[in-house]
Length: 464
Image 1 (cartoon, rainbow, N blue to C red):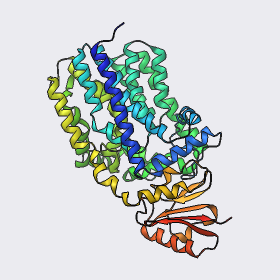
Image 2: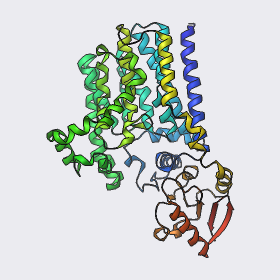
Image 3: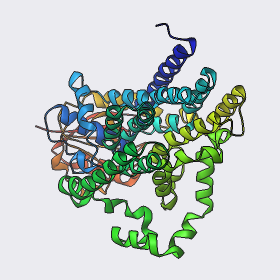
Image 4: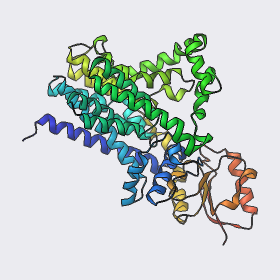
Protein backbone atom coordinates (compact mmCIF):
# COMPACT_ATOMS: atom_id res chain seq x y z
CA UNK A 1 0.00 0.00 0.00
CA UNK A 2 1.33 3.41 -0.96
CA UNK A 3 2.10 5.81 1.81
CA UNK A 4 0.50 9.23 1.73
CA UNK A 5 2.75 12.31 1.42
CA UNK A 6 2.01 13.09 5.08
CA UNK A 7 3.19 9.62 6.12
CA UNK A 8 6.44 10.17 4.28
CA UNK A 9 6.79 13.63 5.80
CA UNK A 10 6.56 12.38 9.39
CA UNK A 11 9.36 9.88 8.77
CA UNK A 12 11.50 12.58 7.18
CA UNK A 13 10.85 14.83 10.18
CA UNK A 14 11.86 12.08 12.60
CA UNK A 15 14.97 11.13 10.62
CA UNK A 16 16.23 14.69 10.22
CA UNK A 17 15.52 15.49 13.87
CA UNK A 18 17.37 12.38 15.06
CA UNK A 19 20.40 13.28 12.93
CA UNK A 20 20.46 16.86 14.21
CA UNK A 21 20.14 15.74 17.83
CA UNK A 22 22.87 13.13 17.42
CA UNK A 23 25.26 15.60 15.78
CA UNK A 24 24.68 18.20 18.51
CA UNK A 25 25.23 15.82 21.45
CA UNK A 26 28.27 14.27 19.76
CA UNK A 27 29.76 17.70 19.02
CA UNK A 28 29.27 18.75 22.64
CA UNK A 29 31.11 15.62 23.73
CA UNK A 30 33.92 16.22 21.25
CA UNK A 31 34.32 19.73 22.67
CA UNK A 32 34.91 18.23 26.15
CA UNK A 33 31.67 19.55 27.60
CA UNK A 34 30.09 16.26 28.67
CA UNK A 35 30.54 15.25 32.30
CA UNK A 36 31.40 12.19 34.35
CA UNK A 37 28.32 11.77 36.52
CA UNK A 38 25.65 12.04 33.83
CA UNK A 39 27.52 10.38 30.99
CA UNK A 40 30.80 8.86 32.13
CA UNK A 41 29.30 6.72 34.88
CA UNK A 42 26.66 5.32 32.52
CA UNK A 43 29.12 4.72 29.70
CA UNK A 44 31.46 2.94 32.10
CA UNK A 45 28.64 0.78 33.48
CA UNK A 46 27.34 -0.26 30.07
CA UNK A 47 30.87 -0.97 28.88
CA UNK A 48 31.58 -3.20 31.88
CA UNK A 49 28.33 -5.10 31.31
CA UNK A 50 29.28 -5.66 27.67
CA UNK A 51 32.63 -7.08 28.82
CA UNK A 52 31.00 -9.48 31.26
CA UNK A 53 32.29 -7.53 34.27
CA UNK A 54 30.42 -6.29 37.32
CA UNK A 55 29.15 -2.79 36.43
CA UNK A 56 30.29 -0.96 39.54
CA UNK A 57 31.02 2.64 38.64
CA UNK A 58 34.31 3.88 40.04
CA UNK A 59 32.75 7.37 40.18
CA UNK A 60 30.02 6.32 42.61
CA UNK A 61 31.43 3.02 43.94
CA UNK A 62 28.13 1.18 43.57
CA UNK A 63 26.48 -1.10 41.02
CA UNK A 64 24.78 0.62 38.09
CA UNK A 65 21.46 -0.94 39.15
CA UNK A 66 21.89 0.94 42.41
CA UNK A 67 21.33 4.11 40.39
CA UNK A 68 17.53 4.20 40.03
CA UNK A 69 17.25 0.43 39.40
CA UNK A 70 17.41 1.12 35.67
CA UNK A 71 17.74 -2.34 34.10
CA UNK A 72 17.57 -0.77 30.62
CA UNK A 73 21.41 -0.65 30.73
CA UNK A 74 21.56 -4.38 30.07
CA UNK A 75 19.83 -4.35 26.67
CA UNK A 76 21.79 -1.19 25.81
CA UNK A 77 24.99 -3.14 26.52
CA UNK A 78 24.18 -5.35 23.52
CA UNK A 79 25.08 -2.37 21.32
CA UNK A 80 28.47 -2.20 23.04
CA UNK A 81 28.92 -5.86 22.11
CA UNK A 82 28.94 -4.76 18.47
CA UNK A 83 31.45 -2.00 19.19
CA UNK A 84 32.06 -0.27 22.55
CA UNK A 85 31.43 3.44 22.05
CA UNK A 86 29.70 6.19 23.99
CA UNK A 87 28.18 7.35 20.70
CA UNK A 88 25.68 4.50 20.97
CA UNK A 89 24.17 6.35 23.93
CA UNK A 90 23.97 9.57 21.93
CA UNK A 91 22.34 7.70 19.05
CA UNK A 92 19.79 5.97 21.30
CA UNK A 93 18.93 9.26 22.97
CA UNK A 94 18.53 11.13 19.69
CA UNK A 95 16.41 8.40 18.12
CA UNK A 96 14.21 8.01 21.21
CA UNK A 97 13.50 11.72 21.47
CA UNK A 98 12.81 12.09 17.75
CA UNK A 99 10.76 8.90 17.63
CA UNK A 100 8.23 10.38 20.03
CA UNK A 101 6.85 12.25 17.03
CA UNK A 102 5.61 8.97 15.49
CA UNK A 103 3.08 7.94 18.17
CA UNK A 104 2.21 11.64 18.47
CA UNK A 105 1.28 11.61 14.79
CA UNK A 106 -0.75 8.40 15.10
CA UNK A 107 -2.55 9.59 18.23
CA UNK A 108 -3.48 12.84 16.49
CA UNK A 109 -4.83 10.95 13.46
CA UNK A 110 -6.69 8.58 15.76
CA UNK A 111 -8.30 11.63 17.40
CA UNK A 112 -9.81 12.50 13.98
CA UNK A 113 -7.38 15.33 13.26
CA UNK A 114 -6.48 15.62 9.59
CA UNK A 115 -3.01 14.85 8.29
CA UNK A 116 -1.95 18.48 8.25
CA UNK A 117 -3.02 19.00 11.87
CA UNK A 118 -1.28 15.79 12.92
CA UNK A 119 1.95 16.93 11.26
CA UNK A 120 1.63 20.28 13.04
CA UNK A 121 1.38 18.62 16.46
CA UNK A 122 4.31 16.31 15.63
CA UNK A 123 6.35 19.36 14.61
CA UNK A 124 5.37 21.15 17.83
CA UNK A 125 6.58 18.11 19.77
CA UNK A 126 9.95 18.13 18.00
CA UNK A 127 10.30 21.88 18.54
CA UNK A 128 9.48 21.66 22.24
CA UNK A 129 12.71 23.14 23.76
CA UNK A 130 13.14 20.34 26.31
CA UNK A 131 13.71 17.85 23.48
CA UNK A 132 16.76 19.73 22.23
CA UNK A 133 18.06 20.73 25.65
CA UNK A 134 17.91 17.37 27.40
CA UNK A 135 19.61 15.80 24.38
CA UNK A 136 22.58 18.08 25.04
CA UNK A 137 22.73 17.29 28.74
CA UNK A 138 24.83 14.10 28.60
CA UNK A 139 22.62 10.97 28.65
CA UNK A 140 19.54 10.04 30.67
CA UNK A 141 17.68 6.76 30.20
CA UNK A 142 14.29 8.37 30.86
CA UNK A 143 14.34 9.80 27.33
CA UNK A 144 13.47 6.26 26.20
CA UNK A 145 10.28 6.58 28.26
CA UNK A 146 8.96 9.42 26.09
CA UNK A 147 8.06 7.35 22.99
CA UNK A 148 7.23 4.41 25.29
CA UNK A 149 4.60 6.42 27.21
CA UNK A 150 3.07 7.76 24.02
CA UNK A 151 3.20 4.25 22.58
CA UNK A 152 1.42 2.90 25.67
CA UNK A 153 -1.48 5.31 25.13
CA UNK A 154 -1.59 4.40 21.45
CA UNK A 155 -1.75 0.72 22.45
CA UNK A 156 -4.68 1.49 24.76
CA UNK A 157 -6.55 3.24 21.98
CA UNK A 158 -5.87 0.29 19.64
CA UNK A 159 -6.75 -2.23 22.39
CA UNK A 160 -3.34 -3.91 22.08
CA UNK A 161 -2.75 -5.25 25.57
CA UNK A 162 0.59 -6.91 24.75
CA UNK A 163 2.08 -3.72 23.29
CA UNK A 164 0.74 -1.75 26.24
CA UNK A 165 2.44 -4.06 28.76
CA UNK A 166 5.69 -3.98 26.78
CA UNK A 167 5.59 -0.17 26.70
CA UNK A 168 4.96 0.05 30.45
CA UNK A 169 7.76 -2.42 31.11
CA UNK A 170 10.13 -0.26 29.04
CA UNK A 171 9.18 2.86 30.99
CA UNK A 172 9.73 1.16 34.34
CA UNK A 173 13.12 -0.09 33.19
CA UNK A 174 14.40 3.43 32.62
CA UNK A 175 14.22 4.76 36.18
CA UNK A 176 12.58 3.74 39.44
CA UNK A 177 10.86 7.10 39.95
CA UNK A 178 9.07 6.66 36.62
CA UNK A 179 6.88 4.16 38.46
CA UNK A 180 5.09 7.24 39.81
CA UNK A 181 4.46 8.44 36.26
CA UNK A 182 3.13 4.99 35.33
CA UNK A 183 0.80 5.19 38.33
CA UNK A 184 -0.36 8.63 37.15
CA UNK A 185 -0.94 7.21 33.67
CA UNK A 186 -2.92 4.38 35.24
CA UNK A 187 -5.15 6.73 37.23
CA UNK A 188 -5.99 8.68 34.07
CA UNK A 189 -6.71 5.50 32.11
CA UNK A 190 -8.77 4.04 34.95
CA UNK A 191 -10.93 7.16 35.26
CA UNK A 192 -11.32 8.22 31.66
CA UNK A 193 -10.12 5.55 29.22
CA UNK A 194 -10.01 1.78 29.80
CA UNK A 195 -10.15 0.44 33.33
CA UNK A 196 -8.23 -2.78 32.68
CA UNK A 197 -5.25 -0.91 31.23
CA UNK A 198 -5.40 1.62 34.04
CA UNK A 199 -5.43 -1.09 36.69
CA UNK A 200 -2.45 -2.82 35.06
CA UNK A 201 -0.48 0.43 34.99
CA UNK A 202 -1.28 1.27 38.62
CA UNK A 203 -0.38 -2.19 39.89
CA UNK A 204 2.80 -2.31 37.81
CA UNK A 205 3.90 1.11 39.06
CA UNK A 206 3.21 0.35 42.71
CA UNK A 207 4.90 -3.05 42.64
CA UNK A 208 7.99 -1.87 40.76
CA UNK A 209 8.40 1.23 42.93
CA UNK A 210 8.40 -0.98 46.04
CA UNK A 211 10.76 -3.58 44.55
CA UNK A 212 13.17 -0.96 43.20
CA UNK A 213 13.37 1.21 46.31
CA UNK A 214 12.99 -1.42 49.01
CA UNK A 215 14.94 -4.32 47.52
CA UNK A 216 17.09 -3.61 44.44
CA UNK A 217 18.62 -0.23 45.31
CA UNK A 218 19.34 -0.98 49.03
CA UNK A 219 20.62 -4.47 48.26
CA UNK A 220 22.83 -3.57 45.28
CA UNK A 221 23.61 0.08 45.84
CA UNK A 222 23.70 0.20 49.64
CA UNK A 223 23.36 3.39 51.66
CA UNK A 224 25.23 5.44 49.05
CA UNK A 225 22.51 4.74 46.46
CA UNK A 226 19.47 4.95 48.74
CA UNK A 227 16.58 7.34 48.17
CA UNK A 228 17.92 9.45 51.07
CA UNK A 229 20.62 10.88 48.79
CA UNK A 230 17.93 13.02 47.15
CA UNK A 231 16.47 14.37 50.38
CA UNK A 232 18.60 17.52 50.16
CA UNK A 233 16.18 18.67 47.45
CA UNK A 234 13.34 18.56 49.98
CA UNK A 235 15.29 19.37 53.13
CA UNK A 236 12.66 21.88 54.30
CA UNK A 237 10.33 18.87 54.79
CA UNK A 238 12.65 16.89 57.04
CA UNK A 239 15.84 14.88 57.33
CA UNK A 240 14.47 11.40 56.60
CA UNK A 241 12.04 9.90 54.14
CA UNK A 242 9.33 9.08 56.76
CA UNK A 243 9.62 12.60 58.17
CA UNK A 244 9.35 14.05 54.68
CA UNK A 245 6.17 12.10 53.93
CA UNK A 246 4.63 13.01 57.28
CA UNK A 247 5.32 16.73 56.84
CA UNK A 248 4.15 16.67 53.24
CA UNK A 249 0.66 15.55 54.24
CA UNK A 250 0.28 17.01 57.72
CA UNK A 251 2.30 20.24 57.73
CA UNK A 252 0.66 22.56 55.18
CA UNK A 253 2.53 25.54 56.64
CA UNK A 254 5.75 24.00 55.34
CA UNK A 255 4.39 22.85 51.98
CA UNK A 256 2.12 25.62 50.74
CA UNK A 257 4.65 28.51 50.78
CA UNK A 258 7.07 26.39 48.76
CA UNK A 259 4.37 25.14 46.41
CA UNK A 260 2.91 28.57 45.67
CA UNK A 261 6.16 30.40 44.98
CA UNK A 262 7.35 32.65 42.17
CA UNK A 263 9.90 30.02 41.14
CA UNK A 264 7.14 27.48 40.66
CA UNK A 265 5.00 29.92 38.73
CA UNK A 266 7.93 30.60 36.41
CA UNK A 267 8.48 26.85 36.02
CA UNK A 268 4.85 26.22 35.07
CA UNK A 269 5.00 29.04 32.55
CA UNK A 270 8.15 27.53 31.01
CA UNK A 271 6.49 24.13 30.88
CA UNK A 272 3.30 25.36 29.22
CA UNK A 273 4.43 28.24 27.03
CA UNK A 274 5.62 26.05 24.11
CA UNK A 275 2.15 24.48 23.78
CA UNK A 276 -0.02 27.19 25.35
CA UNK A 277 -1.85 27.51 22.02
CA UNK A 278 -3.34 24.04 22.53
CA UNK A 279 -4.22 24.10 26.24
CA UNK A 280 -7.89 24.06 27.24
CA UNK A 281 -10.00 22.91 30.18
CA UNK A 282 -11.58 20.31 27.91
CA UNK A 283 -8.20 18.72 27.24
CA UNK A 284 -6.89 18.71 30.79
CA UNK A 285 -7.61 15.06 31.67
CA UNK A 286 -4.35 13.58 30.27
CA UNK A 287 -2.38 15.92 32.54
CA UNK A 288 -3.20 13.56 35.40
CA UNK A 289 -0.33 11.44 34.07
CA UNK A 290 2.06 14.40 34.36
CA UNK A 291 1.01 15.18 37.93
CA UNK A 292 3.60 13.01 39.80
CA UNK A 293 6.52 14.38 37.78
CA UNK A 294 5.42 18.01 37.95
CA UNK A 295 4.57 17.80 41.65
CA UNK A 296 8.01 16.38 42.49
CA UNK A 297 9.53 19.34 40.67
CA UNK A 298 7.26 21.90 42.29
CA UNK A 299 8.01 20.60 45.78
CA UNK A 300 11.76 20.44 45.22
CA UNK A 301 14.09 23.08 46.61
CA UNK A 302 16.42 22.45 43.67
CA UNK A 303 16.45 24.86 40.75
CA UNK A 304 17.51 22.27 38.16
CA UNK A 305 14.09 20.64 38.56
CA UNK A 306 12.39 23.84 37.49
CA UNK A 307 13.72 24.46 33.99
CA UNK A 308 13.61 23.09 30.46
CA UNK A 309 17.31 22.24 30.43
CA UNK A 310 17.59 19.19 32.66
CA UNK A 311 15.83 15.83 32.46
CA UNK A 312 13.41 16.24 35.34
CA UNK A 313 10.43 17.34 33.23
CA UNK A 314 10.85 14.70 30.54
CA UNK A 315 8.13 12.36 31.93
CA UNK A 316 5.57 15.20 31.76
CA UNK A 317 6.08 15.92 28.06
CA UNK A 318 4.00 13.03 26.61
CA UNK A 319 0.99 14.12 28.65
CA UNK A 320 1.33 17.75 27.61
CA UNK A 321 1.24 16.59 23.99
CA UNK A 322 -1.75 14.34 24.67
CA UNK A 323 -3.57 17.28 26.23
CA UNK A 324 -2.98 19.35 23.10
CA UNK A 325 -4.27 16.54 20.89
CA UNK A 326 -7.48 16.28 22.92
CA UNK A 327 -8.00 20.06 22.83
CA UNK A 328 -7.57 20.34 19.07
CA UNK A 329 -9.74 17.30 18.41
CA UNK A 330 -12.55 19.10 20.28
CA UNK A 331 -11.96 22.32 18.37
CA UNK A 332 -10.62 24.03 21.49
CA UNK A 333 -7.38 25.80 22.29
CA UNK A 334 -6.20 29.34 21.69
CA UNK A 335 -4.96 28.72 18.16
CA UNK A 336 -6.16 26.52 15.31
CA UNK A 337 -4.18 28.00 12.43
CA UNK A 338 -1.37 25.58 11.55
CA UNK A 339 1.06 28.21 10.30
CA UNK A 340 0.69 30.33 13.42
CA UNK A 341 1.19 27.25 15.62
CA UNK A 342 4.40 26.36 13.79
CA UNK A 343 5.56 29.97 13.97
CA UNK A 344 4.86 30.08 17.71
CA UNK A 345 6.72 26.80 18.24
CA UNK A 346 9.72 28.09 16.31
CA UNK A 347 9.81 31.38 18.22
CA UNK A 348 9.68 29.56 21.58
CA UNK A 349 12.33 27.10 20.40
CA UNK A 350 14.66 29.92 19.36
CA UNK A 351 14.05 31.61 22.71
CA UNK A 352 14.49 28.62 25.04
CA UNK A 353 16.59 26.01 23.23
CA UNK A 354 20.26 26.19 24.21
CA UNK A 355 21.80 26.00 20.73
CA UNK A 356 23.59 29.26 21.55
CA UNK A 357 25.86 27.26 23.88
CA UNK A 358 27.77 26.17 20.79
CA UNK A 359 28.76 29.80 20.19
CA UNK A 360 30.10 30.56 23.66
CA UNK A 361 29.85 28.17 26.61
CA UNK A 362 30.92 25.05 24.71
CA UNK A 363 33.97 26.79 23.25
CA UNK A 364 35.53 27.77 26.57
CA UNK A 365 38.11 24.99 26.54
CA UNK A 366 38.81 25.08 22.80
CA UNK A 367 42.28 26.49 23.50
CA UNK A 368 43.33 23.17 25.07
CA UNK A 369 41.30 20.88 22.79
CA UNK A 370 44.14 19.50 20.68
CA UNK A 371 46.47 19.07 23.64
CA UNK A 372 43.80 17.15 25.55
CA UNK A 373 43.15 14.85 22.59
CA UNK A 374 46.87 14.18 22.22
CA UNK A 375 47.19 13.32 25.91
CA UNK A 376 44.18 10.98 25.83
CA UNK A 377 45.65 9.15 22.84
CA UNK A 378 48.70 8.22 24.94
CA UNK A 379 46.73 6.53 27.71
CA UNK A 380 46.69 2.75 27.47
CA UNK A 381 43.38 0.84 27.63
CA UNK A 382 42.24 -0.61 30.98
CA UNK A 383 44.84 1.39 32.94
CA UNK A 384 43.56 3.38 35.91
CA UNK A 385 43.20 7.15 35.47
CA UNK A 386 42.72 10.22 37.65
CA UNK A 387 41.47 13.22 35.68
CA UNK A 388 38.95 16.06 35.39
CA UNK A 389 35.18 15.90 35.09
CA UNK A 390 35.04 16.84 31.40
CA UNK A 391 37.92 14.61 30.29
CA UNK A 392 36.67 11.55 32.19
CA UNK A 393 33.82 10.62 29.78
CA UNK A 394 36.45 10.08 27.08
CA UNK A 395 38.29 7.51 29.22
CA UNK A 396 35.53 5.50 30.90
CA UNK A 397 36.14 2.15 29.16
CA UNK A 398 38.18 0.86 32.07
CA UNK A 399 37.38 -0.48 35.57
CA UNK A 400 38.99 2.39 37.49
CA UNK A 401 38.76 6.10 36.74
CA UNK A 402 38.33 8.84 39.32
CA UNK A 403 37.80 12.59 39.39
CA UNK A 404 40.06 15.22 40.93
CA UNK A 405 37.54 16.36 43.53
CA UNK A 406 39.57 16.88 46.68
CA UNK A 407 42.91 18.37 47.85
CA UNK A 408 45.99 16.52 46.59
CA UNK A 409 46.99 15.42 50.08
CA UNK A 410 43.78 13.37 50.33
CA UNK A 411 44.30 11.48 47.05
CA UNK A 412 45.84 8.04 47.05
CA UNK A 413 48.00 8.30 43.94
CA UNK A 414 49.16 4.71 44.30
CA UNK A 415 45.81 3.65 42.80
CA UNK A 416 46.47 5.24 39.42
CA UNK A 417 48.58 4.50 36.38
CA UNK A 418 47.89 7.92 34.83
CA UNK A 419 47.01 11.39 36.05
CA UNK A 420 45.72 13.79 33.39
CA UNK A 421 45.47 17.46 34.37
CA UNK A 422 44.18 20.53 32.59
CA UNK A 423 45.42 23.39 34.75
CA UNK A 424 43.76 25.99 32.53
CA UNK A 425 40.32 24.34 32.80
CA UNK A 426 40.11 22.26 36.00
CA UNK A 427 36.52 21.14 35.41
CA UNK A 428 33.29 20.98 37.39
CA UNK A 429 34.37 18.65 40.17
CA UNK A 430 37.73 20.25 40.87
CA UNK A 431 39.16 23.62 41.87
CA UNK A 432 42.26 25.39 40.50
CA UNK A 433 44.04 24.97 43.84
CA UNK A 434 43.33 21.21 43.82
CA UNK A 435 44.92 20.79 40.41
CA UNK A 436 47.87 23.06 41.19
CA UNK A 437 48.58 21.18 44.41
CA UNK A 438 48.35 17.82 42.66
CA UNK A 439 50.64 19.05 39.89
CA UNK A 440 53.32 20.06 42.41
CA UNK A 441 53.10 16.73 44.22
CA UNK A 442 53.39 14.76 40.98
CA UNK A 443 56.47 16.75 40.00
CA UNK A 444 58.16 15.72 43.26
CA UNK A 445 57.17 12.06 43.18
CA UNK A 446 59.76 9.72 41.75
CA UNK A 447 57.26 7.05 40.76
CA UNK A 448 55.50 9.32 38.23
CA UNK A 449 56.89 10.65 34.99
CA UNK A 450 55.69 13.67 33.02
CA UNK A 451 54.85 11.92 29.77
CA UNK A 452 53.18 14.79 27.90
CA UNK A 453 52.63 18.52 28.27
CA UNK A 454 51.16 21.23 26.09
CA UNK A 455 48.92 24.27 26.67
CA UNK A 456 48.68 23.61 30.44
CA UNK A 457 47.61 20.02 29.81
CA UNK A 458 49.86 17.56 31.68
CA UNK A 459 49.85 13.77 31.51
CA UNK A 460 51.77 11.94 34.25
CA UNK A 461 52.31 8.20 33.99
CA UNK A 462 53.44 5.81 36.69
CA UNK A 463 56.86 4.33 36.16
CA UNK A 464 56.95 0.55 35.84
